Image: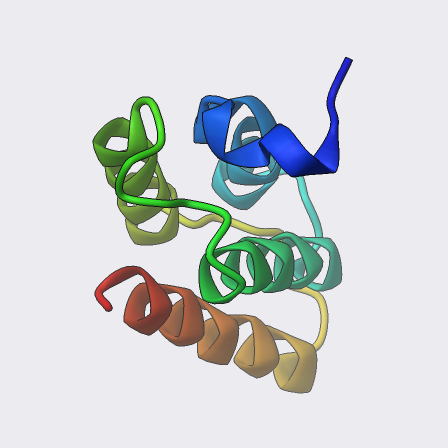
Length: 96
């Protein structure tokens, strides 16, 4: 059972994986992709992927790969631009 006090002992991909799948999916709409990107950004900026965590390097590689291969079903031009901005946010957060 997951306890918040032991999150750093978990493999980051165990909680990032579902969000990365959404980001890579062609069948997901722009707003849903944007929410997944926002979640990954928040997890990165809150320190949930610690360098000392198991598989931290693999997790960062998976994040970079998902963002680089982000696909989403285009809906509205303005919404799509927001998703593109969120891609840049995650890329910047992951490089720090």
